[in-house]
Each structure stands twice: as structure tokens, then as C-alpha cells.
Image (cartoon, rainbow, N blue to C red; front, top):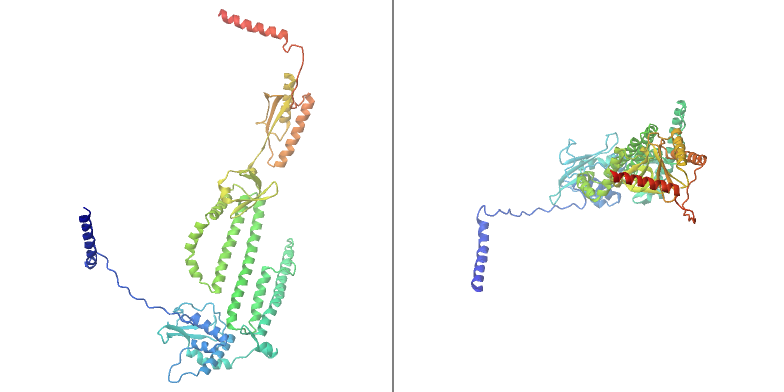
Length: 560
């Protein structure tokens, strides 16, 4: 049987293998596979001339480093019979850099990074004009052209029309007078391709800018003091002269930027310097905005506190934090854009990043939304005494992630807001009265009338006390305990503050002690007594009377 079965299987396999190529030839039986087209490989220009920004920055870097043989490769190739001389081209590159350093006033941060350049500037598609934000007399603009290189790749070059204007612009330059008055050593020697005297000037300008900025802020504070004095407002605390605030930082950065503009630094270093200036200005403005938001939050918080609106005060503090975080993110994106990062791509990927962040930080978002629910539900507020999971303390802060409690041991307890929102929370602020429940234990040798006298005396004390709630107050003989007669004193004291409650309870207990002393009642002590006596424990006359009563009831029942 095995032999014929194997032959059948072999024939089936052969038929299937034969049908596969046939099926590929039958239309509609199998999908047509499109032919693979070889994609042309995109070569990257080693000099970075694919876009206008790469072209102009590449030229500046090469010329700044005195690599003029590389810098001339950013020039538009000469046309016609006569080729430009190499030495003349390198001299032209040196002159163009000098002209750009002195006469180009536009920022290079906004030069297009698109291979096609800007299409909304009114120029042909293959041309790009690089100039300052305002065309002023003496300013220098650069025209870039886009054309094919020897390999057929579209690249950007500095146009020959711009290069033709360089010698005339170079001859009209006036070099800083300061270079003629300082030692030649500081002019000729360079550090990172910039003269030493310019580095020294930049460092000297720092304390000068700080002193000038501090004088400006001090003048502003003096005007504010005079204005408040004219309005008869309380004076503000003055900061010491040595303290640098946000206003001083902003003024110092602006003064330093203005002073640095007079020494004619390199255009490339101005690019990096402008990024530093933007970063420092961003820090200064964020510092100012946070001070403003915190001052407004503090003022609104004091107003809400005076009106007893503690939940609203906590919400204001939460909104302040949210605003500060939003401002920080916005200013951070501005700094990244000025530094050269592609913020558009970062914003495009924000959705995926938010999803990943949400999956990886579930607890964080749970705590954040828990804090929002705690604040808006007004379950707890700053300053409340509450109990959470057997932990009692005073709420000091309700943040985005956690709520902090100051315990009785003066330790700071941090509870995640997710737990706060899901736990059983006991808030003592909403308590309108305090329960006072005491058990008095009196000796067994007191007569019933004596006990009645004690009960009436304590009831009178409760009724006479204005802090005791009459509707719920009671004094009752509770039980015969092991070694004492127990009397329960149960009442509510109408005090919202815990310290006031303790004071009222203390006065009440002292009055009860006076009532016990007045009636002659004695408090029982936990003890055991052993009595040895030959006397009968039961009174004989009372026993006979009880027996007679029992017999009488029994006889009546039998007759019936």
C-alpha cells in the first residue's frame, strides 16, 4: 500500500508545480506583479549647496576659515571663453566675506532650507535673494541662482551679478577706527578665526551691560516708589543692588547686543551670538512672566482666602502652574527654532509622542486628573485638616502630581492625587460640632437616691452650658459594671475649632468633678475586695417577705 500511495502523492506534487507557472500566465488568476523600476540614487552635495541656507552658510564657514579654494566653489561657474583666474576668485571670496561682515544686516536664521527656495518672493523659481528685513542705504544683498552642475544635479550658487558688485562695495568700506588705536598683536592674531581684540571687547561688555542694566532697573524702581508714595500705597521691599533680577537680565542682554554691533564681528559669529541672545532673552521673559503670574495668583489667592473660598484659591494655583508650563513649552519651541531645529517636524510627531507618553505615563496622568478632580470637587483645600488612609495632617499644597500633608509629627507626607481621588477622605474642616462622650464610674456603695442626685446635678450642668447642644445631650445610668456603676455623659459641643472644643470640654469636665464632690459621690477605682464575715448576706425579714409573696402568687395560680 505504501508504494502506490507514494506514487500518487508524487504525481500531485508534480501537477501543482506545473500549474503554478501556467497560472501566472492566465489573466485574472493571479495579480500582475509590476516590474521593479530602479530608483535613481540621490547624491548629496558634500558642500551642502542643495538649498539656499546651506549655500550661504557653507561659503561663510569656508571663507571664515580662510579656505578660499573651497569658498570659490560656492560661486556661480563663469561662462564664456575666459575663465576666472583662481587667485582672483579667492581674493573675491575674501572681499565678499568682508563686505558681508560689515554691510549685511539681515539674520541668517530665516534663510530658506527648502531645495526650491522661497516661492513667494516674486523672483523666478531658480533665484533667491538674501537680504536684511529692511533695505537700507549701504546694506548689501546677495542673489543666489539654482542651476545644474557637471553631474546634472540642481545646486545653489552665489550669482555672478552679486560678485560683480563686490569690488566696488569693498572699496567703499570704512574699517573700525578702534583697530587703528590698539596694538597690532590684538588685530593680527586670531582665536577661532576672530581677532583677539573682539573677544576681549565681548568679555568687557558683559560687566558694562550688567551695570547699565542695573542702573536702568534701579531708576524704574525709584519711579515706582515715587508713584506708590503719591498714591499713599505701602512701600515695596527693595532688592539689593547686587541682585540680578529678570528685568536686569533683559536690559543687560539688549545693551550687550547693541555694544557688540559696533565692533563689526564676523557674520558667522553673529549667527551664533544671536542664538545665545535669543536664548537669554527667552529666559528673561519667562522669568518676568512667572513673576507676573505668581504675583497675580498670590493677590487673587489672598482675596479668595479673605472670603473663605479656599477651593477657588487652590484652583487658581493649579491654573498658574498650567500657564507657566504652557509658556515654558512655547518659549522652548521658539528657542529650538532659532537654534536651527526643525520645529515643524517636531510638532508633526507630537501626536505619536503624546500617545507614547500617555501609555508610558499613565500614573502621572492619573495623578494629574486626580488633582483636578480633587480641586473642582472641593473635597479638600489648602489649610484643611484631613485624614487619608489613617494618615492625618494639614494640607499644605495641592500640586499637579501629589498633595502634601503636614502631619502631627511635623513630617511632610506626599500622597499621589490618584490615591486622593479614590480614597476615603475625612475632612475635619466641615465638622460643625464635636462629640463629648464620657463614662463616669461610681462606687457600688452608693444608694439609689444618691445616684439620682448625681444624675440630676450633671444634667443641670449640661443644660446651663451655652456651648452644649440641648437636643442631643443626655446623662444616663448605663450599666452595672464589674467594679462600678457606670454613668454615661453624652453631648455635642458647639465649637468648629478643635482648640476651642478642648477648652469647652475641659471646663465642663471640671464642673462635673465639682458636682461629684458636691453630692458626695466617689469615683470607683479598679480593685477587688475580699470580705470575711459571719453575718448573713441576706436580711432575714426581707427574705421572709419575699418568700411569702412567692407563696401567695403560687397559691393563687393553683386555685385558678
